[in-house]
Length: 201
Image (cartoon, rainbow, N blue to C red):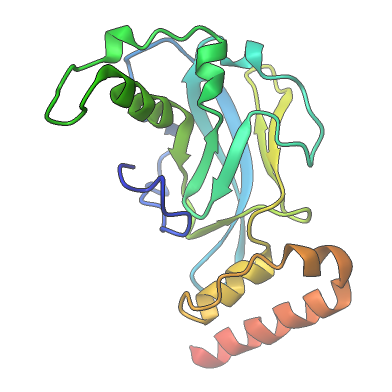
């Protein structure tokens, strides 16, 4: 996942067969969270998905229960996956010391390495050609008890993903406002783009 954090529209490299995700497996006790989300395939089909992500043991205690539409512990959703707030690790008292390599050829000091580790621990690439997150297709994250602790609805809509795919990446717009306020036009635009994809086959 290195190099992906700054590129929101990078494709995911996660294997479709993989079901459990942890960027630093075996290095700290974990708890299993479940992400439910939607992605759009290369040929424009909606795909409902589920994945288990392993966050540090105790992470659920610093994340309050929320309703759909509230971010909760989710910082953002991206085409490649999602990230939780790294600051929650500090709030729960996570100890980075056993994970530090003290490799000064990679990190100028401990603070930079801790920042790198915090993102590795809380950000996950997930299977899917183009992951979306909107009111119609929310990204949902449940803690080990099945309580909703994270949601995201302000990323790309289905229409936004289709427009990106059809244009070869030239159209980068989520169409969130169109989905909310002009449903009929939104639906018509989806049909037009799906027809264009069929014709291009």
